[in-house]
Length: 278
Image: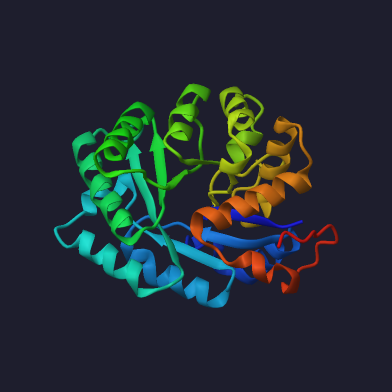
């Protein structure tokens, strides 16, 4: 069985002491690819260095909505240049809106739209962070759709209501579930996980944050734990874990243009339940 963790932050200091062991654990769990998100462009070289060590890692570049005070006149050009500089860049992100922790709405919207324009220019999907801002985000994306055409991307670490989920599905977005979906009282997330069509479903850890049950006591989440997310989503949807893993792996490859499927039969891993997805 193969899994792809579509959102990680391995450059955080939580992983510096034992990265090799963390990688061994994700390989043992059947994680054959990871997409590393980016909080701000200054992280780019550190993310590249991690990808140099672990060839299953692809990554994004962008500026997080809670860091938009770092936006300068040169930032758009910097993100564009970095995205063009490495073929392992598969997305622009994470970008978006966060009205839970900040109230600089106009600034966040302007920076989001600037980065969305970069993604459209490069024909890359976007990784969207959206917290307490679903109506505003949906309206922005509808306007862009009407004026310029469809936008590709994923609503990452999704915790919205089923109604909000449908808004983004109608706009063509993928929906990615994190450890939140394993939380006992996350009822609206459970309903959203049942709602998302099979061809639009992704799983992630958002590590080192949001450790899933039964690992909620762990201070640090890690990519190997994406299996717990997949298990819970498969339970909610009434399907086998093997099928859920195959579906989400294919979806991640489709969205991010990953070529991992052709290589899966020859990958080194120790999961005895492995199945061919090629």
